[in-house]
Image 1: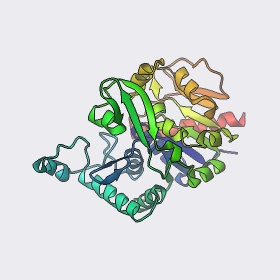
Image 2 (image 1 turned 45 degrees about the vertical axis):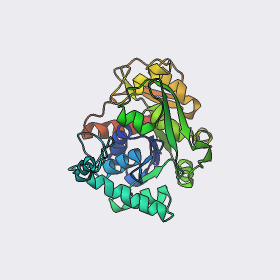
Image 3 (image 1 turned 90 degrees about the horizontal axis):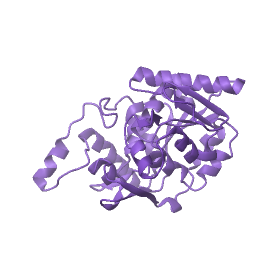
Image 4 (image 1 turned 60 degrees about the vertical axis):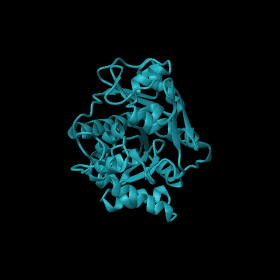
Length: 313
């Protein structure tokens, strides 16, 4: 019997590529995308959820396809006005993007939780799969750096363009987080779990750090497959390889597999690389480069097909 219901764990731009592929490679009603919120922050009194918004814009076909984030055909009149008022903006918020943040913040003040608001946006934009934030509580990734001490994640990632040397990571508020019931239901009903090619430490670790999440995943008896974030020791985009080296790890598939541990029972590496020297129930290679929309769908189709074929054996 085919494995039909898929839960995908992702961050932003890299994970959005696989989310897009799966959305178009399977019945989207059977897909649940669990998204990192560890890079959420407040700016100008507004709640910003960069990864959730990137997934939302991607699956509603509104994303800026050049950058992989933000909204297509965006304008920046608000941002361009700020210097006249003595404010030098470092985070690029477009006018269309601001509308979403304003409505989200208003709903939060009215008592709605982040899952309800995210579903409202997805429904409004015609998205047919579930997009679920990893937690309704506010969790902040803090990055301790050699050059500047501890930074908020967006300062590290955007303001300083992830150039400071990373010493350690901390998730402020994680101890107060609770397992989202929507996520629990989705995982209990899932036929397979896929960990997307997002940064394991910056994007996936916050999801896995929600109290009870690792145990919930380990309790399942289904394929739990991670797709490599590396091709020939490098990330297609972003600081994955850089921060691995700064943490004393080799930028390799073996390091990624070791980090995920028994949360996964399968791993997909890129066909350009050698087979990782690790023992897993499922281990195979694909062309994982998703630099066009067509390739994203092809990777998703091949991934689903290979997993299904191996389960039948």
